[in-house]
Length: 238
Image (cartoon, rainbow, N blue to C red; front, side, top):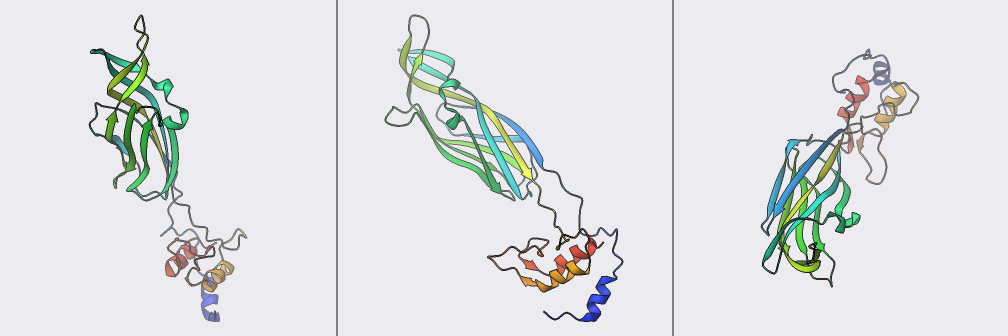
């Protein structure tokens, strides 16, 4: 690329130290912790978080943990309420985590729950979906719920019996981290100073970034090295 000498001389003497038109201060990651407590007797359940997270983050990390699974059961026409079966749920089934690119809306998890695994008779089956809506509120959906049978210790002289599940209560925690976009680094040659040498690198890479290669001169991450990247570099001159 041929760059006019007059342009380089002008750029090298631009008095831009201290300017701050385009670059904001570095953003910190945001973390929210939401607790949920839902129950169903077979109907669909929908839960919305009480607060929201930044919907415009670059990446979201979600971690989901069940802290309580409680059931009501019927045996011989008698209802037994509030039986804690949390310990019967494996760690693999009670926790999960994932990372999803932003911005919102987005889906953090979309899984089919089946407990226990075949060929054992089904105790509970449902579709579990966890997402962030466009405003950053957490959404949890438990749909297509099937309640079956289970073997439960009813205590006392009754002992362990096969019972019918009539209600399930599920409580847990959902932690979501909104990871802020990485701040651009206009010091393209890594010498600790933003100057004419960085400007030369940017201009030599002017245009659409090659799909297969890294493109450090694309400071705003839009896939093209253009005037917006030039402005970012000039705003950080020095």
